[in-house]
Amino acid sequence: MFDQCLYFNTSALARRLEREWAEAFEPFGVTPPQGFMLRAILDRPGMLAHEVSDMLSIARPTATRALDGLEARGYIERRRVEGDGREVAIYPTAQALAIKQRLNDASGEVTARLKAQMGGAAFAETVHKIRAVRSALK
Image 1 (cartoon, helix red, strand yellow):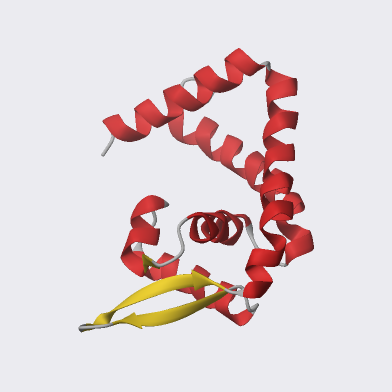
Image 2 (tube, one colour; image 1 turned 180 degrees about the vertical axis):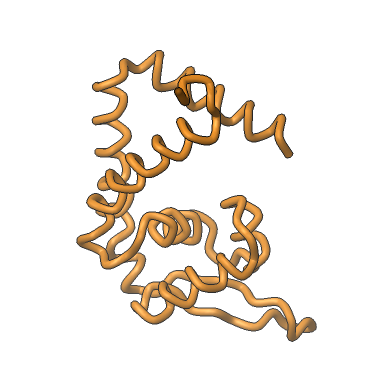
């Protein structure tokens, strides 16, 4: 019935992937969106809040809520940008820096497992096609 339905199939896939990464990030007390956000912040300390939302393709209020959760867990701190009181830069804390490798490894293990299940070429092709669809629908 829904074989040709992009919405149904991508939503079902998203739910499945959500479970995979929820399990991977559970030891760190973060959700998958927070885990990926933290990984981005660890990779690029000092990003502005709007840059975080743009990088992750999420709305600013959604990014703010995720940042609030990361801040409450002691993983990030917000610093006002000099000269513009409206801008906030996001920095990882020492606590976040301490888990950086384990966080990246946990995510990498999920990716490796999916590649093994699908085959490396099929995995890469699928990610490429999904990115192309995202770009085409902007």
